[in-house]
Length: 291
Ligand code: NAD
Ligand code: MG
Image (cartoon, rainbow, N blue to C red; front, top):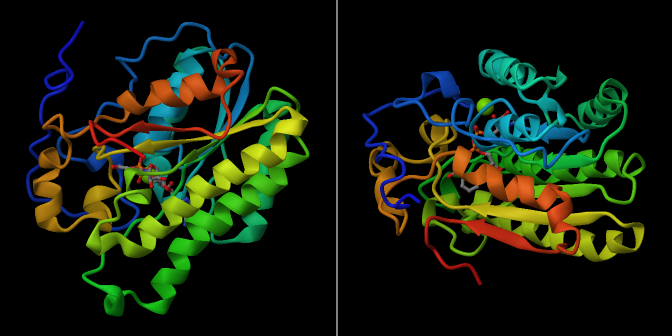
């Protein structure tokens, strides 16, 4: 048993900034995506999973955990994130599973369809879809959000999830699982993240609406709502410089969460253990109670 307040040290980040979308391997300090620390128990043996944004942060931790639980995994990410993706692909293979990479930009709807088709072909089917990729850029106020940036956030977070899920549906059989990365921001939007927060609420609603629609097909749909987790999204425009440096103070447990601490919720929702769970959002917020 460990004390959740001290299971991981405070990240205590030095001042840093990365160009969007940022790289895990340049994060100071490094985060824990579970390569050494996550222990698998065969809970996803033989499953085939596609994870968007699987190169870094939470998506990377989910990819590593899924592989350690016995799944083959395809990951999607932006081409400039290849160095992060290489590390995750190696970790999947080190776990004895097949790893596939299909980089591209989710703002391109044609890519969304090709991503699914190529993943299904490579994996030999699809059992688990994790809509995890998202764009988060802070803005002082609404007047500072350019129309183009608003559009980009909607395109990655909402159109991307919509298009990838739509393309995946015809491949999903009874027993399949769709999981969205929502956020505590869906319930408690920060003043500087209004556009992002609205997409997280929408992803949460999309998950709940789809769950009722797909239950008659035997497909479960759920979401995970992380709290503050130490990932490259934060110093790559997701938070102000001060916000990054104060990142430990944003949870009730008094420290930032680590990506590996999110993996269990995604594993559970994809697994047989969750066979009666659909339309649910699991909060992994570091203590913030969700509605
Ligand atoms: P991350 O930067 O590691 O992951 C986000 C990924 O989104 C990137 O790796 C990138 O591959 C992908 N992405 C962004 N723009 C893209 C585009 N145009 N085309 C294709 N892919 C694109 O950060 P993370 O924190 O691990 O984020 C993963 C998910 O977790 C996101 O949905 C985020 O909203 C959610 N989340 C994160 C936190 C947190 O504190 N880190 C909290 C709540 C929710
Ligand atoms: Mg990344």
